[in-house]
Length: 390
Image (cartoon, rainbow, N blue to C red; front, side):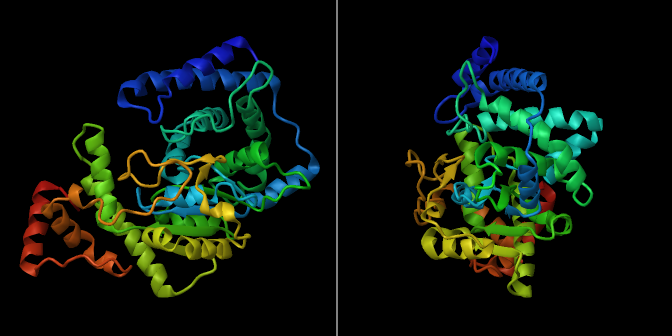
């Protein structure tokens, strides 16, 4: 590997401030990450796609048709579920959000088809170096003079891309995400005869609005829907804005996402148990971790190994699952401190939330103190006037 590529990696690493990237470094970080990913992609193009064996291709394409999609409103606990699945040998779990229907699909529509691969390739290289703007970084390890796992990933993606397009794309518009998953699985667990990989997994918040598309494109998919108490979700968003020194401007979107998510969950609950859909309440995962994880393993038909109790990202200890606990040790599940979020919410916040999502949340077992009908009508009128909530 060229020294210039090593130098770019070192400069990018210097901007990955531990434990979390700050607003002050984000602009410079984006510029450097773009330069680094472009250099890695150019090196991969010069080397050409990896050569895949016939048995590898067959095994990889079998896995391609068996995805696991983790979804739920933002800050509902989807990351913790993803992190618990991360190190299981039967799963190739993407370490960053897939965001195909929620993001990439729109970007690809604006590009010529021959620009899709380099666009997604460089984007995923940046995600492998810095998946969620906090530790752990460099999920494929650091490069050396002789070898870069990031160049290998890019070459693997180049190899799997036409196979995913031809063998998966006939029925799935999201085949580019499958190509990314196959490339990642190839670089981590591999698809050799001795590989244990059976499924690939990704998490994308709000993907529950696309469940019909996911079922159509992947008839053998497994869908995991995570929900959480609306007060905790809202408080987590609000606290994140406060910690960043910003005003909380996303109240309307947060509530809209919660209403939609709860409605989807309630509808599936009314239908009864399904082979392809599992609802997990975040509170149950924290309070009854073992039984919830065992149920998750049974749903996915994988062995309930002890590693399912340890949150990791690409095998590295994951950051705390709670935004309300500061300085928590990574790689552990941190039970919620009862009502730790209470101080973040005002009385007005609670009334507005109860009015907007109370009925939907109640159907999932979340008991919000009801607002008097006359008061609820006033709040709805005020909401329409201020556009605070939907």
